[in-house]
Image (cartoon, rainbow, N blue to C red):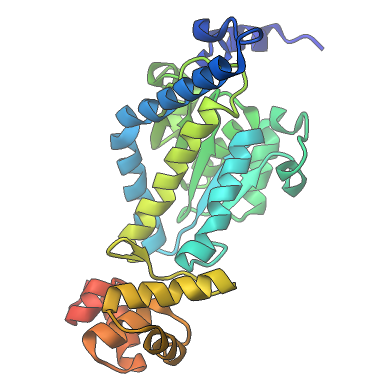
Length: 312
């Protein structure tokens, strides 16, 4: 089925252009192929730098939402959707968050995580329906993710979120001026536009675009969690001890932060109900578990405030 309008759109997208540096990649020696891919990946990292002020604005929106009982929903298709689901799935084990707090919506549903669901991204109504089914409200934030910026599923999700009164973010890998000239600009509170340039393989946005997108999503979730008191110094202190590695990591964190030995760290964690943050405050403020919990609550979840006995 022909679609001349879509054809014209794709011609204008940076991510759909041919990369002049990789025109001979099909016959290049393997070392040269790898050098070229690696060099282009570095461009993806550099493309994020000018977007950092916009990422900071987005983090402020997220922290405000989280502090008021709101949630973050990533909405994407294909690689973009999978990256959103991945970032959301990592928040509970890393930061001890409720799985409802950060969620990923992907065109085609859960099956699309493992096998491409062709056509699922082509309908704005599917994105709008996903937002409705997730129960998005005015307290929440919906972050659209689309390397091309034009994916109908994503546009529909963001549009519906705005209609519901939610705050909206957008991550794309095409230039900012192109985004600001689009209809999406009017319904997006903050856009992050990492202009990575043409892909090594034309249109393969799982490559540089995927790399830049993951960098931005990492910053959105991690910086927000830092601002929510989920980190002490540079250590995750709300992690969940859900497997052997995380049990031992929890002991290591307590040992490094307080200077106690292995057995003391273990017994303190046991008294703290397995909660690293509580164990740290018990040892560093020399208080019992209940007092430590009270101090943490009074300190807004921040270990430094809890140790000092101050309020956030």
